[in-house]
Amino acid sequence: MTNTAPDRLSSLKALRLSRVEGVVGTVLVALAINLVIWLIGLAAGASYDAQDGDEIMRVAPGGVIFLSTLPTIVGMTAAALLSLKWPVILRVAQVVGPVLAIATIAGTVMTKFDSTTSQVFLSLMHVALAAVLYVGLEGMRRNLAK
Image 1: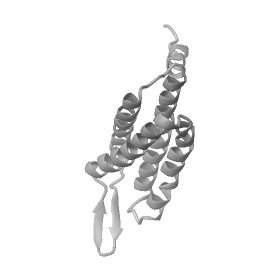
Image 2: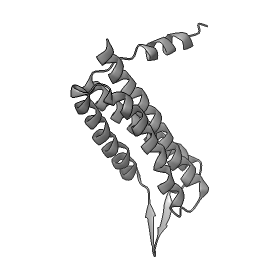
Image 3: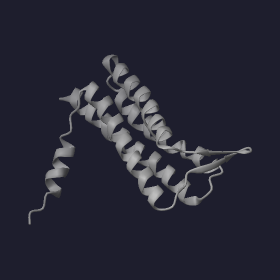
Image 4: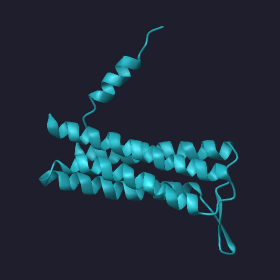
């Protein structure tokens, strides 16, 4: 049995993405990971029901899709376009994007979900998004630095 961990690590270190690849790839990877986290949470007993006044709101796959893609498309596109004039913006975005993704966990925590399990898995989606944003922006930055 061969160890492929060093190969994977070196390919991640060599990641170079065009602006289009960075935006589209980051959006698709974030979406896929967040849907997998949503499904794992569902299997673990999360119902994703939240009390909103007299109404029960459910975080459905459509909501995960919308909230995983729209902010990511907007932020990554803005970073990609601004980097045409100011390449250093990608470093700034590598801080701002993940910080915003983590900061929005507060909204999840403050929402009255039916269970802690729902809050934990929804929060994990924010953490995953932060990591994916960082890697996608780093790939774009490395492509410009070549």
